Length: 133
Image (cartoon, rainbow, N blue to C red; front, side, top):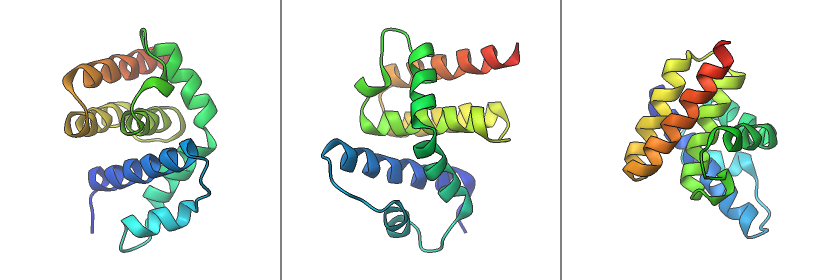
């Protein structure tokens, strides 16, 4: 059984694939993408991937509001997936905010460079603090 961190990474990989398909105007099946990445169906992964895709417009708007001198569409597809999951968890789930942010940052440390990780951390932190008010 995979832990939540590993499941988030699978969700990120699924979203990455979806973004690649969308970018090349290729048809795809989200369920098939997830199934290829998981041995056993998982509700958490399904919720993250489908939730991010359903709320992508709102997530992108929030990301662009808090990214400084960046646009979510300029990020790499991996970084877009990581940031989208972080924002989705902050906004639409009951995952503790500190967990949502830390998990996104850990994925970013693994898949991105330090500059992107810092930028992502700042954007998620600003979003978190704006929600507290």
